[in-house]
Length: 371
Image (cartoon, rainbow, N blue to C red; front, side):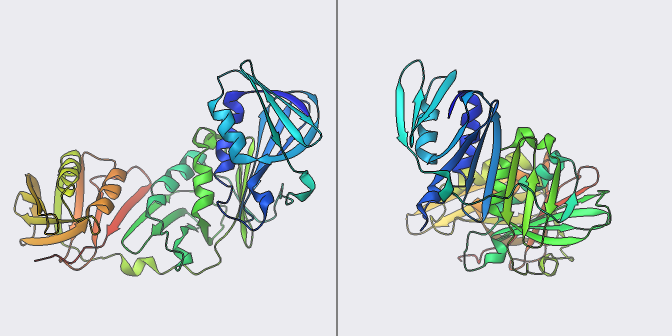
């Protein structure tokens, strides 16, 4: 194995690979990435047995070959190297990395120990605009749960219907739902749960999403085929909760407030909120919104007033400031719309006007106020 590659090409590939590498594993080989080169292409593969990636980059090769190398160590070296060409040469089981400024040698393992990764998969094929898929992921991924005792919530629910697609994520404290109408699915209908790790991996290829060729969904797996990259993931084999039941339909109290003004106020006030609950209090009355917090442990107290439009009887309601700010960051309009009912039920947050053929809404659960 002997080839030359540009730093910018191999660094991007290694960033994606190390995102797949498990932090802990009973199989040492999973800490390695598989390098295989032909005359003009290097493929770099990584897997944790649930999510796998194979990406191809251009190289100038003098000798073909293959080896597995400690992915994180190789990535650390490449990250610190100056821009320009990098030479790789394999001698026995050791790879030599050479640049204009130095030489680095790393011992690898034979590729025979590396798991066989799928190159193709049978199943339902969906062809769609990659930028649309990217947007749906970005608008929901922040709400995925990290609670491993609720595995169904550790991914994004993707509902494929005859004329639309939906993505939903929730952690029980907040929920995000995006619907794209007028999508051609060739009559396919299916509900799947995509693990968060696969979506984070896909997210690293934003610039290549326009090259999305297809998405193939099997019984237990999903395959994203980009221009020169394959991302293969085991689906979460759980039943997703009935999210429609928790989305309120009768929230008649309505608050409209400037997004940037509201976000800035919440950030400032939250500095003095409780370090565990991050609780802020919203006091609502006609044309006025008061954002406040009180933390008796540190003697912290903050209060700000914001001009807004509120219809409904006066009300006080508490929220986790961090959850609120994450939701607000997703709303793409100058003003936020809050639809509320009472201090103990879920509130809805959305833009004043949705994009064409799109319906996006977030739900946030309140906190019990400390009187």
